[in-house]
Amino acid sequence: MKNLAHTCELKQVVTRIVAAILLIAAAESIEIAKARDYSDAETLILRQAAAGKVAQLDNLPPEKRTIRAEFLVPLLMGKLVGVPVSHEGVMITHATIRGRLGLAGAQLPYAVWLNQCEFLDDVDLSHSHLYADLSMVGSTFRGDVDLDGLQADGNVVLNMTKFDGVFDLSDAQINGNLEASGTNFAGRNGISAQFNNIKVTKRADLDHMTIAVPLILDGAESQILTVGAVASDYSPPELRGQNGPYDAKRINLSHSIIHRELRIAGMQIESLQASGIKVEGLAALENVHIKGDADLSHSQLFDLALADDVTWPDKEENLVLTGIFFQYISPETHTGAAPQDSTKEDAKWEKLSEWVDHASYTTAPYQQLEDTLRKEGRVDQANDIFKRGQQRAWSHGSLGLKGKLKNFFLHWLIGYGREPQQAFFWAIPVVVGHQNAIRDQNQAVGAVPFYLLLAGGPSTKIEPWLPLPVRRWLTCAPFFCHVTNSPWKPSLFASNSPSSSGSSPGPNWIASIDCCGLSSAGCGRAGPKP
Image (cartoon, rainbow, N blue to C red; front, side, top):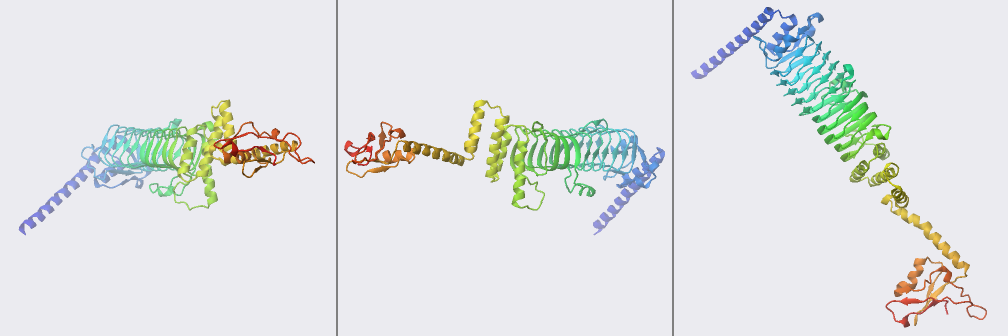
């Protein structure tokens, strides 16, 4: 019991010592601030940083909210001599930062919050390493912002931020989320916003953006990527009910890799470049209007969802689908919409067929869509896609005269092999016409039925109006016979109408027939019935 009492007393002593040290440090920081001629805003920031609280400068008059960049740089790096910073980090709101914030290659050991702030000059955090989160929510950047090669161990949050100058986040590695919902890229001088080759461990939300410059994500990698009016739990609440459309001059997603889900919704895009993009999960486009050009060549999309309200460029040469691959396709974007009646559902699926028709002609998109539709159980539509592709091959493919003639006859005779029953309907008029021609010729020479006589057996009646294959079968098939003198020519039929004397006038028609496998006594002659 005595040992326990001593231990408790020791803990109390240690706690009192630590508290005293913190109080002394805070007092020293205040004295340092006074000694170094810190402004009221900077003094408040030091006090709150030591206490682990947010320095809310909106409580100060606007003219007293300005802080110096040369004050902020050593503070964020933890190198402001004699100034302690809590493990919570440096958290500042509603400040106006004057001067260039140069932190290129710096190590920032704390979380950095610079929300609702205004940066009057350039900001450079290129190749810096943040050991926690970086938040600049609602801030305005009047100069250029260089975050090239930034490495962040936490989240990078840029929601509702406005960038008037050049923005560059290329080659950044973010081991959390990239949240840039509602960001405004005003784009002085029209220079593009660079996100190319960024690597985001979790999700990148670029929804509800105002983009006056090209948005470049060439080679980007993320688990989830959202662009446009996409409802997300990560978006600020005030943005979730806004459906757009949001305008974009150019969006470049070429060679990017999305491991789980890509969603683009509620946008009017002048140019969409996505050649070589790889989406290992769902790639969904909804309420997207592409007016200029779109390039999806050599893209790999596991599950492609194209809503029926997606529109593509009017000119075929401005939509490129060469080498596109998708495992599944659907007109539904899996957003939990209520099911519709079958007529509307079929109309949505039909819109997918029109999609490849509006692209520059290559065979691969038709083959890919046909195979995918067949997997979905839509066999009739898959056959229709195949025929559409063959028809475009006639008009747009590099076919010679022979190839075009073959294409033409395959289309009209058997529907390119997908409608073999057409051959039956084409055969009907041919058979009927042939039969009528034979009957007319037989009537011209007064033909009547003739008979096949067999020794010791009944005769077989052969009607001249029967089709030629039927007559041949009746005459020869039962006896494995071979007609040696073409007796089936209509001109060889002769009248065997009996005369008044009972004999047949004119030359009786005689057919010579070889009957294979039978003796000569088993085979008679064909002619008028005796």
